[in-house]
Image 1 (cartoon, rainbow, N blue to C red):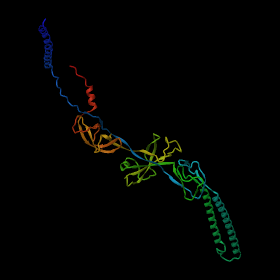
Image 2 (cartoon, rainbow, N blue to C red):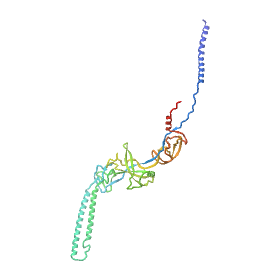
Image 3 (spheres, rainbow, N blue to C red):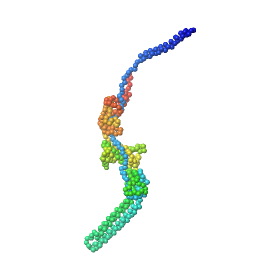
Length: 407
C-alpha cells in the first residue's frame, strides 16, 4: 500500500474527534437555555419592619418610707488630754498605759514620786495641830480676862480686854492651816494620775522615769461610753427626718443603721439621731446631724457584732418620714430634665414631663405627671420620637398564644 492511500484512511478518524465534542457542547447550551427559560422567578413578598421591642414598668402610687443616706467618721463623745496637776518623777506606769489600752473610770494610769508630798502633808498636819493649840490657848486667855474684868466691876468690857481680836486672828490661822492640809492631801492624791472616765488611750507622751512638771500632757484619752458620727445633711434631707434644731431633752431620735467594712467583711451597727447642729456650714451649705452609738467597744455588753473603732469611716442610713401617694420609678427612666416616655394603649410613645419629689441612688419618686396604671418605658432608645410605634413583651406572648387557623 502506498503512502497516499494510508493518509486517506486516517482522515475520517480525525474529523470525528473534532466535530463530536462541538456537537455535544452545542446541545448542552441549547438544553440549558431551555431550562432557564422554563424556570419561574420566586414570588416577591414585601416585608414589613416590626416596631422596636421595649420594656416598661407600670406606675403605681404608694406610701414610701424614706431613708436618708450619709457618711462620716466615728469619734468619741468625750475626749480629753490627760495632764499632770503636780510635778514629779514617774515611778510607776500602768501596763495598760499604751496606745489602745482601755481604762475604767478612776483607774490609775501613772504614779509620781510621793516623798516630797508626804513630807508636805506631815508639815501641814503639824501646822494644823499648832494652830489648834494656839486657838485653844487664846480662848482660855479670853475666859481669864473676862473673869478678871468682871471681878473689878469696871462696867462694859472692851473687845480688846476679852482678847477677841487675838482669838479671831488665831482662828484665821487655824482655817489657813486646815486649807494647807487639804491642799497637801490633794497634791499627794494627784501624784497618782487616774482616768477621768472609762476610755481608750489614743496616745501617750511620757514614760517611766521621766520628770514631768505641772500641766504636762501625758496622753489623750477617748471615752468609750458613747461614740458619735457627724453626718452632713442638705435642707431637703432634713425635711425627711424628724429631728429638732439643736438638742431637745425630750426628743427621741430616729434609728440609724451604720455600715462599714472590717477586714473585708461588711458589719452593721445601730445608733440613733441625737441632735442636729443648729448652724449651717458656710462652705458646704449643709447642716450636721449627730448620731450616737452607745458602748461602741462592747465594754458593757455584746450589743454590737464587732467593736466600732474610733476614726472608722462609716455609711449611714437614717430612718426618715413616710410620704404617701408617690410613684417610684428606676432612676434611669427619668432624664435630668424631669422627662420620661409613656407607652400608650395604642403602643405609641408619648413624651411626658413629671414632677419629682426626690431622687436617690437607684430610684426617683414622682408626685404628679403620671396616672396609676400608665406604662413607663424603661428601654433606652437612641432616638425616640413622639408617636413612634413600639412592641412590648405582652404583644409577643399574645401572638404566640393565638391558635393557628386550619383551612
